[in-house]
Image 1 (cartoon, rainbow over the protein chains, first blue to last red):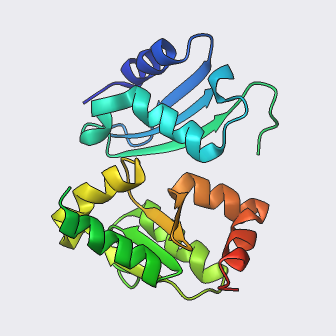
Image 2 (tube, rainbow over the protein chains, first blue to last red):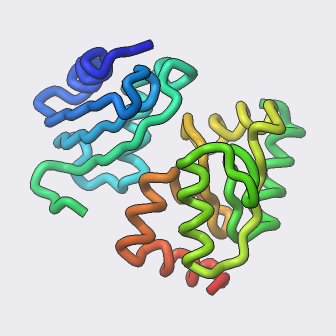
Length: 80
Length: 107
């Protein structure tokens, strides 16, 4: 099971200079919440932004992470 | 994924203007995220169809590939993939979901 720090590192490796916040919702290291603010999201739809995050997490999404509540936006875009 | 499974998925998303692939059923959702989307669709007051992916391992695996999306629930409106729980929730709150449903001719 990944730790929030492991997920955070993975996301930072994919999105350098991003603001990444990850928390473990249940204390069981399989239900997480993540917020990612990255310039890579600029001009992309939410759907595309979430797909980029899932791609960065790769095989972790195949079982290790059961649930991931996700908030994404580009820097400068207002929180919605 | 097999051609047969792809054809099954295509038929489901084309035949139902609002199609929710979820864990459990509309009556008994098996996951909080799936339940959240069911509740939103009820609030939007539209007719919708659900498919329990827990009862069909083949569709469960194939749809991830079909949608390029690794998690459930997955909502399709008018044959188009809209998103998972977080996106549907945001779109419901902003009014975009309502527009999307209207564009598909269901409200």
